[in-house]
Image 1 (cartoon, helix red, strand yellow):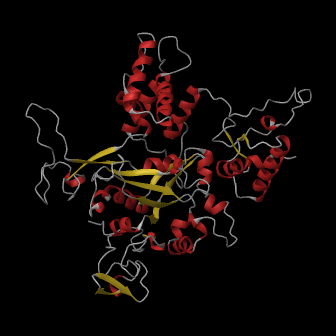
Image 2 (tube, one colour):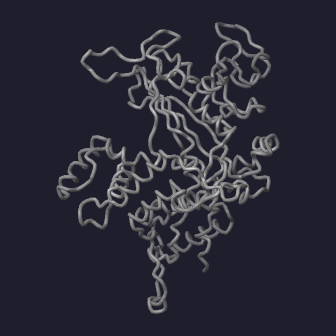
Image 3 (cartoon, rainbow, N blue to C red):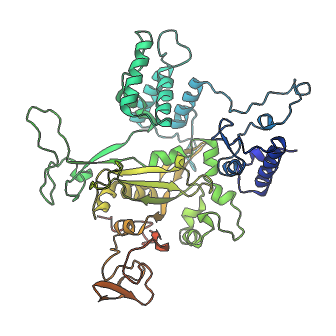
Length: 493
């Protein structure tokens, strides 16, 4: 039977779903009575055993291994005589040299070094190269060409760091544990090796790949950020609270009262176009989506289509990114009686097909608020909103690997996704009191009765008792001011 369906990128296609059914039937015939079989999805990689029902689910969600066209691990017999002259097909991904892989990463991150790319619409105008960016490229290239120790041909300094950092993230290794093993590896290698001594120095080497983040000091009372025009201040101009903690006079470094971590969005959106298959998937909503009045993706919804009609210039280029934002507070320490709340803010691109857009690999944490922001979450969102405004108005020059050309990437926030209490913080509209309904707003009919606020006339946002609930309003469009683009709340200040 034909196995071409394995290579089909659309896992919702009838051809792919029929192929999965054929595989399940084949596995049942070859393994009669078996409850569990090897799972050939890209995540399990034929190393984990799952029930037959779960295997079918995994194949739809993750896809089958692209090279597993001969199902020998599930009972298929291979004719070695007839296939002796044919190229061997294994059930694992092809092995790529680590040094070549790292050089490919550098070339993707700095496309100007690979080829002479011209601006769209302009003839013979080279892409401008920032001096700091070129300096970072030279440092990375030096580490990529430097041997880990004299005579080592398998690993360069950069290759070793990338491999170790990848394993640290994959197996959720703490920084303390990583520092210990890095020290052990450094002692095992020859004394003249160039391996970093700890996690901090390894991060400095990878800084040029855009894997860094920005620390922004905040007022203790959540009044403001020491950001842009307030970056040099030592006290909050609103509450006069000191920016730094009181420490001994002998201490050379100052400790801020409160710190917010901001991860720039532009570099990670640009990274989506640095791989050919990802760059192609970012146009899926326009080029490969089936328009048959069936709701499979946000692009099938009326809000998406209305946005395209309102902003035809933005919709003309399918590479422009439609974003969603999600946030909620949680206690990372699991101590429920402790008054602590961490608020991460995630962005996720809706351009991708439905089997990818909600995967954790494509969810981008943009802001990490390490303490409860109270009602002042808009203060902490200012860097993100500034960047979103710039992406909407000016965009950012981006290299598209699939076409080999530069283009101006723009982005817009289409929706926020949150529960009802978090919706009040993000939208700026209180979800309790006499005007708690974010749909009715000032037109809500409410009154005090039996010791609580009651809402009459079919209010959308609350129940009859005034209790907060999760409802369809938990996902709200933030394109309230369409004339100025998708801007959330009143963050123009």
